[in-house]
Image (cartoon, rainbow, N blue to C red; front, side):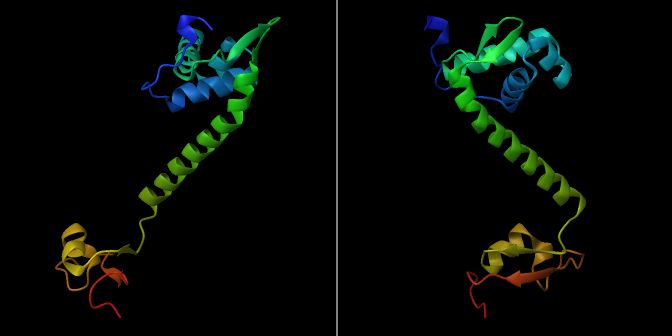
Length: 144
């Protein structure tokens, strides 16, 4: 392993790097991966190179005209698929929450802190909007 291939602890891995890694593995080339991602080929190359430096292993090797994932990269591909799936799920649930606000909210807090945190959620608050319905948590004092 060359000095440049050693892991760089403390360097963070971005979802963009993982997406580029997955795209190159799927497409078999940096150029085709760049087209899939809507990025330039040098940008995809930089993303994968940065990921490779961060994890400390070579991720691809040339196999004729194709870029083939190394054995270490193949082991990591399943993990990265889960990470991207999880991120997509989080993105979807966040979008759903933004467009479909719940009719009420639950706060596992005592009345004083919950009325301060979310005054429209606590009965008797001055605001009586769509968020005014609430359920008291079993953790709140005087809950039945």
